[in-house]
Image (cartoon, rainbow, N blue to C red; front, side, top):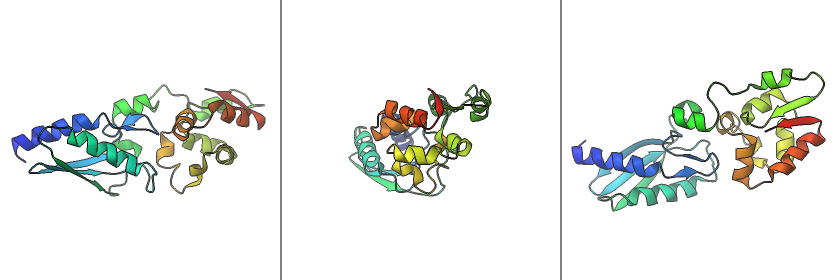
Length: 193
């Protein structure tokens, strides 16, 4: 790749750091969603993926990616190519993204939370929903009843569920976190936020 193109790719990556995934509140670069950028003349071709296939935010992200890329001097057109291989996983995220989402050491595990009381069920909303679903058999159904209908999409817990917390999900779905907390308390849980 020509040196001028390398400089453009670097400028594009910098611009893409301003494109925030509204569900996770982390930019697409640090999430590891950008798989490659090719420059052909004054056109940029951005290869990207999504955290899950069928993500309702794909059009939103593509539009914002195009705007960011077109803001770079020397780029007059942008094509966004959605690719599904290699499949996205949280391992693609940068350390900064993992830290922002509370995935690094120091995070309480559901086992530690569960051991804190033998009689009452304690649930920590700062723990990723995949861990909560594994720990509590009724978690998915309670979340579904609260309006998190996408929680039953096959593969969601194994992908975005590894990083999504209840408060982040509530914010993304525009649901009242206090009502979700109340739903868990009604089922006998003590909620930690």
